[in-house]
Image (spheres, rainbow, N blue to C red):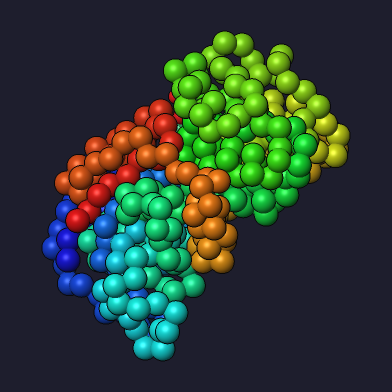
Length: 318
Ligand SMILES: NC(=O)c1ccc[n+]([C@@H]2O[C@H](COP(=O)([O-])OP(=O)(O)OC[C@H]3O[C@@H](n4cnc5c(N)ncnc54)[C@H](OP(=O)(O)O)[C@@H]3O)[C@@H](O)[C@H]2O)c1
């Protein structure tokens, strides 16, 4: 099979496309013939930083690191005891998070507890780019914030991979949603159904909103998250996507009487099936704004690294 191996941490040039043996599924596993994958910020962080690679693998580094977690494809082979899926089934999933998913490959092994049947109304490209961002947004909006009808919610980077799903989930739950991005992404964010759009480059959001029930802060900055705390009402909730900021935020949260929750996304077929139900009903739609070929995968990572991606970036494999 063809796979990108991360030879050492550093720039995209360290991702080397190589031919290696195709793995065989064990009991409870399937072999997926990959059709498309999604690119996520963690892909870039793990490529660039040895610490991030060590963190995600729990310090157990395999001899060969194949990056990537998002996948959509067709089941090629089933392992012993697998009855939930058959050869030829079209599936998608976030594989082995935390750990290495190894989806930068034209074949990949998946545990059956981590995949779901692909919604028929999504093509492989859209399905492959969905799992990590959608599961993260679900854990933020549903599992941790438990957003309810009528609640006033601010979602930062509503134009990004996680943000664009979070807006749609929060609207499904009946919230009043305010989304931030820069002006060039206003039409995109409004198309997701926000009630208000805030251009974060045209003045600080603290001057425009306050007394919120929930803020979902996707920005990788303690200072930004502390600014978010200042617009949440006492007893409200802050959801942040950098769980390692917990210590830095704890005294501010205590002082203001706000509950803080850090998200750490996990692979989960049950949650992915709930997301599939919303996608099949047309209530949630992944927005794929840029598609690369397998040979262009390093370019896809460079685009993700820019921090300017809109919706999701996908790589088509075969
Ligand atoms: N803890 C977890 O389990 C977990 C899981 C997934 C992701 N994450 C983290 O969550 C973050 C977001 O992930 P993502 O996939 O959504 O990223 P993304 O798709 O790369 O986000 C890009 C978007 O962010 C917007 N943006 C950048 N700075 C902004 C700001 N200051 N205010 C408002 N919008 C801003 C950009 O819009 P403009 O161009 O208009 O600025 C762009 O559209 C990343 O840091 C990622 O590492 C954590």
